[in-house]
Length: 455
Ligand SMILES: Cc1cc2nc3c(=O)[nH]c(=O)nc-3n(C[C@H](O)[C@H](O)[C@H](O)COP(=O)(O)OP(=O)(O)OC[C@H]3O[C@@H](n4cnc5c(N)ncnc54)[C@H](O)[C@@H]3O)c2cc1C
Image (tube, rainbow, N blue to C red; front, side):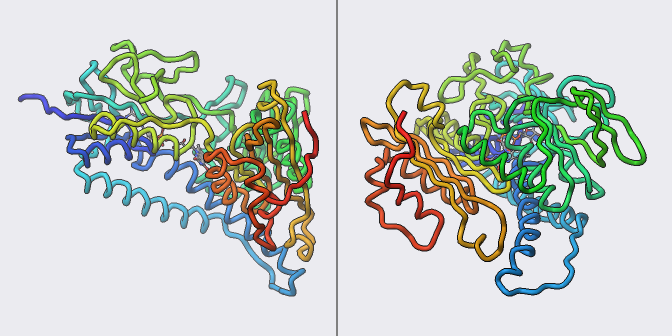
């Protein structure tokens, strides 16, 4: 029997793979796409979407507390974890079906199997052993949670993958990690009522973010009752009384129901056949690509988290789209990886775009910092002890706004539009010219008159 031939074989049906497959098919390419787990990938099945649903669940607890100051009296409220998990599962099943349908409607053949590279133009479908000839291969295999060093009892810990499907609510949870996934889960479990301990090796959470944002988030997390435990790691986990006893590197012992590791993510390049064709990987195992996603093997491309550039869904989607337009649509374009606005759904949430103060200082150019910290209007009646923080980093000579950092309610919504302004190289004078929308928190961004400091 002759081997089947396609123009494009996509390995991995996540954010980047699905978009690339669909757009390439719409350009007339014959496309196959293999998925070993569930169509939709990390974002839909066990990342952004379920995470944000859980964040919403936690915020209702805040709303219930905040209502009293506004005159509302509500009876005893009760939270049911299993209802949340079941409803989340229904929603991601619905989204998975939409992703699959959109790809199939565009003419993509979706294969439910692990697939590996068997040659520069050959993919092997592991469930059947069939080999497919492909003019191009796209690696869109994403990344998986890092598990850290093999300490005694490490098999007792969970990662974000399992946290979405716990069969019980963790009344006490210890999260290890200081990245955005760690602080998000610490915040959402705390809001839902868990006693949360956050353990991290670094001295502060959210490495790479603006220093003041990091400080303000730590202050808010402490105020919310999260036990921040910097400068330490887990050295052992053991089962005790139906829970877990966790030993830390300073000898301290914490008893919890669950231990979650959020130690970063590892690109999925192992056992993918890449060594057989000599695809170049970097020191962390990510696929090395040029600006259109091409590897050192001209027929093999890669997009998304497997390339470990900016590991976010909208970036993976864009990279997949640019690849398909460039290779199959005769419409070459590349993704601008500078100025990607992003959010952290911590409590309170963070929105950030552009340079942190530290990164701007490192450029060695004079900068002005404008910042404000204030009690949001809602908190005056609710009595909630929380502060909103905003900051603009401005190039002193050109007046161009280099960075915008927000922590507080709706920061993720605000930063999307600040991203448009910074993309247009808005100057501080443009922010100043803009009439405020009142009464909002966002208006503070256009009424910051005097620099807090010049450096
Ligand atoms: C807990 C969590 C929260 C997140 N929150 C956000 C957020 O709020 N905002 C945001 O922008 N990003 C968020 N992300 C990151 C986002 O999910 C990823 O950046 C995005 O999913 C990357 O898309 P991708 O296409 O590169 O890979 P993925 O979406 O991971 O898709 C890769 C797919 O390939 C499959 N696969 C792997 N190997 C093979 C193989 N050999 N054969 C067949 N199939 C294979 C996998 O099963 C997977 O479905 C979050 C991630 C996590 C873990």
